[in-house]
Length: 143
Image (cartoon, rainbow, N blue to C red):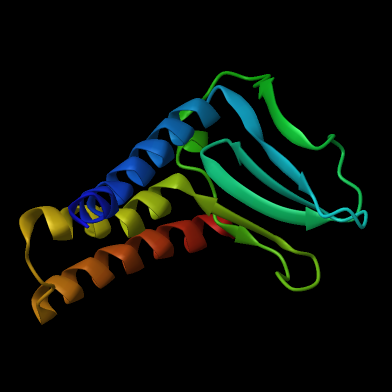
């Protein structure tokens, strides 16, 4: 039981490391994984230009499995923060989430068990305010 607790405590750190490495690698290449449902529909998870993109499609331009494609341009500071975008998730089926938002969401999951504190109302207010500021930045830059 102690090992399960230990690994459950380490899982957010592992996810944070994966997100940070994915963010760094997405500046230099486009990579991801394409899953096939067998009925002609596919699910694609891609990392490119500082964002994580999840999309579904009937026909995808890549074959099933992992892929890696080098970026054609050098990374710039503007593209390193990614973009927030979404289609009609039910019908079109795609969602683009920037890596900084993923890091901001995962950070309290890692810090909380480490410091053994509970979110007090002031902590929750500060966290939700900083998350709202980050979302506002991406929503304003989208237009």
